[in-house]
Amino acid sequence: MKQFFAKRCNGRRSGAGNKGMSCRKARLSEKNGRGPMRVCEINGNRTHCARLASMGVYPGSEIELLCPARGDTCLIRVHGGTISLDRCTSDNIVVTE
Image (tube, rainbow, N blue to C red):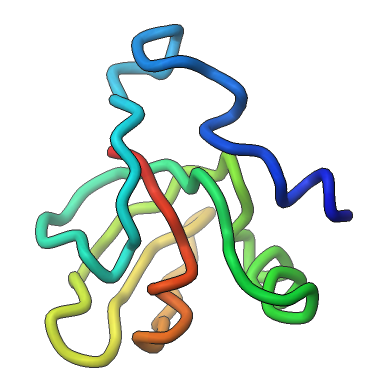
């Protein structure tokens, strides 16, 4: 399980088949724009990572930011479902555009 969450940017370098996505990392809570993103890494303890993985948020998964975390929560779409994340959780998710 630990190796699964240790993946970073799918092991790819910038421009190496990322489907037009750059490999500039940022926390999900810091993103201002909406649109598709790829989860690069998830920080936190094992329980936290397992809970996000059960909802479909894991390194390498594509998400769509619907409502940026300007306040306390942000909305993301993952595998057709919409998830609301608190500020602490979105701080622990690192994404690339």
